[in-house]
Image (cartoon, rainbow, N blue to C red; front, side, top):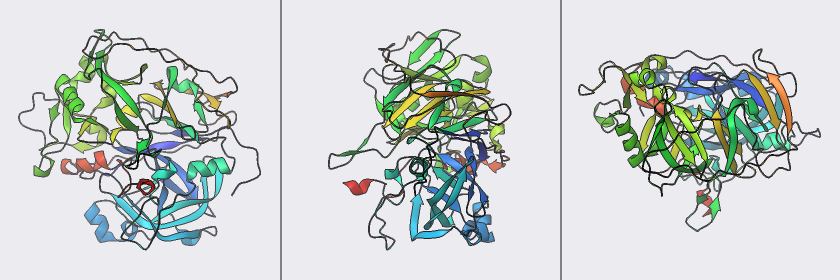
Length: 513
C-alpha cells in the first residue's frame, strides 16, 4: 500500500478479518515542501467518508483525529492564545459506523509538551484506495495540536499502554493499530513498510505499506536489528524503532576527505522518527559538529530570550557543494546527508529571525542547522536525516534496512513483501554511492555486510509522473499547505512539535516491569 502524503506546515511552538486474498502492498505518494512542516496523508474516516489530514509518524503508535467538538476547534479564545486553529476535524455525529470504544481513555503527551485528551473510538478508515473496517483510533476532546496523527510504530508504544493516575482507567492495554489492522484484514501481507521523503525542496515522496520501492534508493539496502528497550527487571521489549549508530563524520566529496568526529568505541541507539523535524544527537557529538561547521550555539539561553537554535553559515551550501554529514550504522551502512539538507534557510520555513540573531555571530548569511544537542536518550534522527535515507521498517521481525535516498525519482519498482519472510529483501537500488576515504580519528571502512536477496519477492514497475499506478498499488495525491509566518520566539515550537518518539507521559511499555 503506497500512500500519498504532503508536507503541512507545523505551527511554530516554543519549544475483523475479511475473507479476501491479501494484497502485496498499498502505496501512497507524499508531497513534501520544507522542514518545519509535517508529512501529511489525506484519509477518510466514517460513513459517509469524511476527509481528514493526518501527520505520518513513525515515532508514535496511535492514530487519532481532531473532532468538531475539540476545544481548539470551537474555543475562539483558546485559538487566539495558541495562535492557531484546528485542521480537517472529524464529526462523529455524521458517521453511522462510529462506535465509542473507551470513554476518556485516550491521553498522550509528546516530548515538546503538546498533547491530547479524549476517547478511543472505532470507525471505518480509508487510506489510498483500501478501507479498514472498525479501526480503533483516538478522538480529541482537548488538544493543542492543529492536526491529528497517523502513528505507525510498535503497539507497545500506544498511549493506552501505561497506568494513568489521573483517570479511572485501572490497567493498561494495547490494541491493533493501523498496521496490525491492515494485516489482519488482509490488505497487506506483513507488518512492514518503507518510507521515502525525498529532498528538502521536492514535491513528492511515498510510503508503501507491505513493500518497498527499488527506484527510490541507491546501492544496497543494509539490514540491521531494531534495538530493544531493556526494562528494570532485565527483560527486553520492542517499543521504539531505533538502531545502533556507530560513527559520524563530516566529509567532502570534492576535497575527498572525511573527518570522523566519534571514537572507535562510539555506539548509541538512535530512533528513526518521521514525526520529529530535526536531528538530536549526544551533547559531545553535537558540540563537535558545531565546531567543525563553525556553527553558533544559541540554544543554551532559550529561557532568557534567545532563539534556542543552532545557526550555520548559509554560504556553506554554495561554497562546499560536496559537504556531507555521514551517519554510520553497524559496520557498513553509511547515510550521507548533504549540507543543503541539513542547513535550513529561514525564509523557506516562513521564519523571520530579525532581532534574534546574536550580535557576536561570525557570519552574516544566517541559516538554521538541523542538528540539536540532547543531554540524554532518546537520540532521534528526524526529518533532516530521513530525507537522505530510504528506510524499511519491519515490525514483525524487528528489523530496519537503510540505503541512500535516490533524490527526485519519478519511477517506481515495487517489491511486495511476503507473509512468510523473516528478513527484508536486501536488493540493489538504482545506483551505487561512491566511497569517500576517511582521514579522521575514528575507525575507517569496516567489514562489508553480506547482502541477502529474497527471490520470492514480486516486483512491479509503476510510473509516478501521472500520480497513478499501472498495477497493484493504491495511489492518492495530497496537496501541500501554506507556510505561516511566525515570530522567532515561537520557533522552538515549530522545531520541537513533532518529537513524538518520546513515550507518552509515564512511558508506554513500562507496565511490563
